[in-house]
Image 1 (cartoon, rainbow, N blue to C red):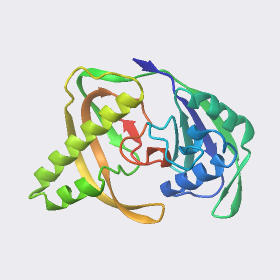
Image 2 (image 1 turned 90 degrees about the vertical axis):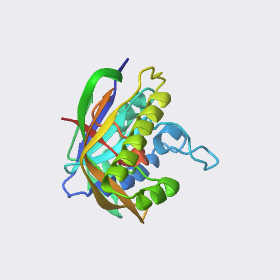
Image 3 (image 1 turned 180 degrees about the horizontal axis):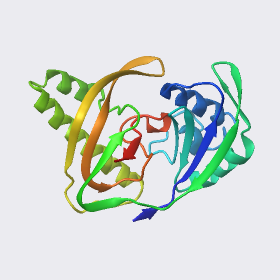
Length: 220
């Protein structure tokens, strides 16, 4: 099926780390407190359990905000209303901002397609982290991560209303561990390339905390 993401790029003068995506998300959420898709929380504070339709990223020092489905109209409002950001208590004027709309395929493919992780992929939760640590060999760890990657893609497909009818095959390549943080907590992430028989639009996220910029993919 086709989806039509809307991509907003914001440029400021200061350099940003990828982890700053969380701070951008927090500041913009203050503009749209009554809209749960912006900050991914319900009015009572509980998490909104669905695939995020707005995702915040920092890639090559550019702030990228992706909207899909009902998130598209919100990204348009962000483009119109946000002239500056507050990051680490510092006022940052938006120097330039650009809006891009594009159509992309999402769904099963007849061949393996190559992708790369542009930001750390948070593949492991508390349970499968123990399985990963106790795996007997690098091959066993890679196979575990490949199964998790397939599960991540199936979760995204379900969240976007797409039914996967063909078996998925994922192959990780040059995958490596990286240390990162999530809300101040040290986390184990992964960078590298993968191939899978599935079309995924560029800049969408896989795994945990994709709304905060983790697991962002690029096409090779």
